[in-house]
Length: 417
Image 1: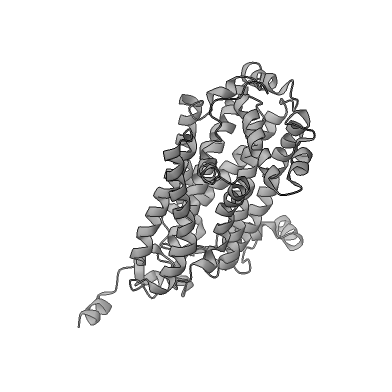
Image 2: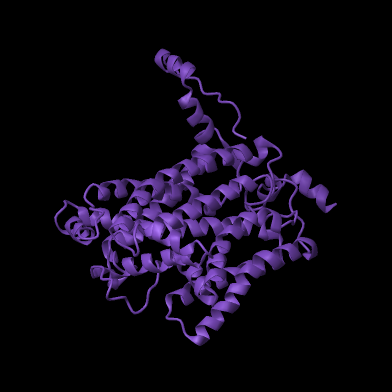
């Protein structure tokens, strides 16, 4: 949708460089002259926020890696060294831990916005699937990073999650031993997790590049779910209209980021992780970070270990099939009242699963978790397909301009007549 670049450098050196490597032309066509729907709201600023958080996580992670020792005997002490002895090490670490929280928070808002406004529908199926892959990579990276402090909860979490592969028939135990590098979680496991935790963010950067590329081919969705019909009337230039909103939104996000870092940096960190890992002392209640709690609740809700693992991965994998599960010709929930109702029910289910994942399992809570798990998959596998054929939708505007621009007096009079 961005089309060929019209950028022409003013200097002779710039023209020489551009004729051999049109880098500035690519930037101009992608982030300056790129047409965006004129009706985008602030929910569309989370792409910029996520880009900022990804860079922040990589920069702080590289600095932390310079001082971290991936050894079962020294990892915990190296974290204390970073916090106490490295200049501003406490700040870098808190930026990284708080950044993970805000990274996932922004990602979830971004994903729920896509589900609400139908951003997974044609022609953006591949754009959506790449986004699901990015989320899976984020979850894997976060889990690997959670193990690195080598505290009690880190060790217990690594043991519980890696043990899940042992549910695979015949070869599960062998795969678990291969992951551990031995017969239990130990020094080889920590080394492997550190290596992968360092590598995966750069793979995420590559996936994000593909995500942005796919976005610039198909163009952005919008709150009305109407495709661009007239570039001049339906769109505005990315700069300054979208960039101003992105800068403002990132600035507000930075305030939240700073509040977490300087006022409550340990609020979301588990107290058990302040104790060094001890294979002989397991925390009373093993839980992952908050952003993985809904999937942990689904895992615990199913009594069969293998089926629980399948449900855990299926809960993420099902997202990739939304373009084919939801066949409604109307994209936006703004014009789909029934779908909008079920969407908010689904959002409540996800929040409920997150809360249940943080609680100690009891018979009553496990039963509730099973109902919510059925509701989670039912939204995708039952509600979406049924509404595709039975829902009565509201009339959608002919174009983006008709939805947001005031009608001309003569057109309004003619419409009344």
